[in-house]
Image (cartoon, rainbow, N blue to C red; front, top):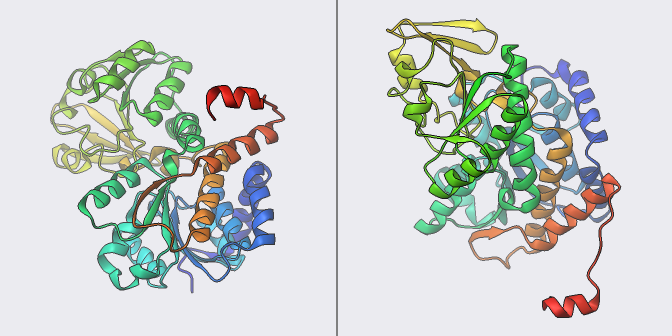
Length: 411
């Protein structure tokens, strides 16, 4: 029995899924292969992703491969109720609805883990963490997990170092066909899509502050520059800071950047990046957004405590008036702005990312019992397979090494 908002929304969700299916040729071809080979026959898959149309299509691809799907959302504000209704109407089990409380969010995760999954597809590490704390009796059944995000991979490495990770985990986010495109081009476009559609304000001519210059931060900064903004980057990593400077951006500490920013976007994977120290320094009308996985990068509790007044300024935008009379605006409660305020990454980008997910899950199923507990990179052949499929879908051909060249390179 699924736990969703409204099954009558299914026709709207079906239209969304049909649109992304048309624009996700890699996943479409993989689904056709899976339907013939049934790599997940007899296996239960617990999946927690941002439940919009692209993720829904991945769920259907996995189901075509024989997987018994148990699905939950990975963020209370990223679930699209019409999309989950379409999945349920199509026969899949889903426990997710937009705007759920954290208690309801945790309960939904419990529902998909209590079935005893064989494979876990995770986004942020909540499933894996919960499995290791509340469902230890079911851990021996888990073949392995696939992790979608940088944040989740950080948690996996922490568990591995502590010796507590009990099954193999594949770092999907670190695959070249994921982070080079999803994190940079996907995040770069979808963040500004979410900000612009929510605020209805121009970006050109504004001062944008991007916190973090990893692959996601690079994409956000690059797109802001392309939209005509003056971009400042804040960093703690000296090498990334140099890279930002050489890419043409101004680099300074957040305490200085807070004074000049019109729009702030945190993309670090860390907590308390913008804090009580910074709020009083900001301009009246500054807009705060977050594109990191969890809603901890902008210290919302400190902002709530500091504000003398809070109000809804516009749908999905809250205004916080400070004692100094200035008002700061927060989009999407400080949650992932591209999903809390938009449709997430473009379909063509998520096609590559979810192709990596599907093939990595198949890799785990094919290697059941052969991999010791630990963190594993996506096999290079999967990465290259996805890249070749993508080039083919784009009508692009490339050269191949001759045998003489392979011998010269020692390949």
